Length: 170
Image 1 (cartoon, helix red, strand yellow):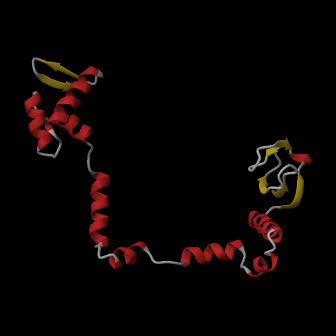
Image 2 (cartoon, rainbow, N blue to C red):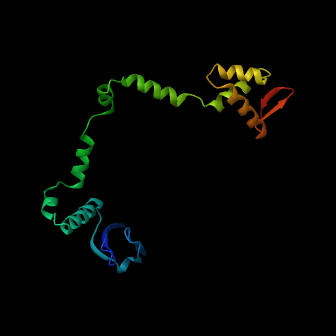
Image 3 (spheres, helix red, strand yellow):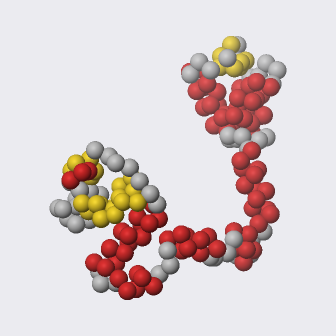
């Protein structure tokens, strides 16, 4: 159930769903018992409540006739989804290749983070030293200084050990 209610303090109108014990005015913040609020309309249809509230706001501004000429919310919502152009047409019109963009997005979604690459190096290399891990990660575009910091961080966090220069994930 939806109700269009008003505030006796600032005259704001809003829609309340259900039957709460209290309601707070979104404009001035005054809280009152819901039963004390003036209900202009109570309906099971949210769109109908939206229509009534909009109509009341338009009438307050002297635009009741203009509002009456508009279509319903449901009809306007359908038009919005049909309006404009789709992403592919927009990209092509901008001189971009939508297929390459989709491929790049997919590649980005499946690519590994720097930290994941460092972990992968420690896990897959046989007896990995710092130099081995740095070599592995730099081939995958991870900077050497980042790799060294990441290794130290993993050891400090207790997620890896370093013994005689060899790293191992725990």
